[in-house]
Length: 106
Image (cartoon, rainbow, N blue to C red; front, side, top):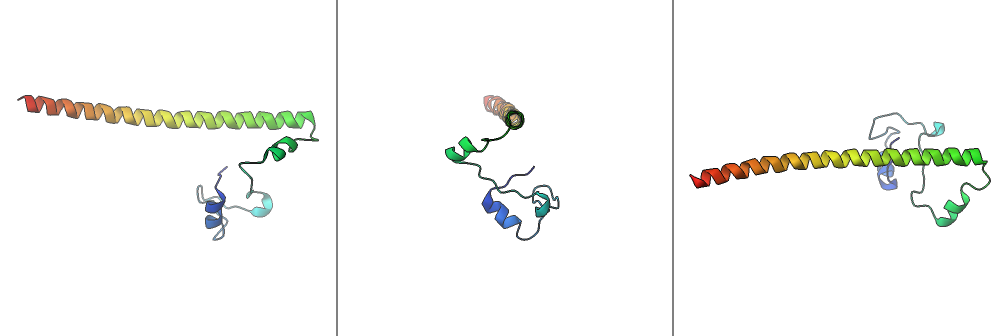
């Protein structure tokens, strides 16, 4: 699933129904393009599950938790990569500084 803000989607999709992130052909009739409000109102959040069977509500909740776990794990991987890169840069700079100090002492 690729998610785009409305502004980016409006720029990309009028030209062709091809995902700019993964180059997948999209078909609006098959439901590949969905518009959704990412900041729904409190009223919407209070009413969206009303009338659904409990097993459906639990399935939706389970999917929401799985999606949250996925997002969290991706964020942790990303931050870990950034930390590793910064540690490598720090090590390199420390070695360069030590070389400069040794050269200056000679």
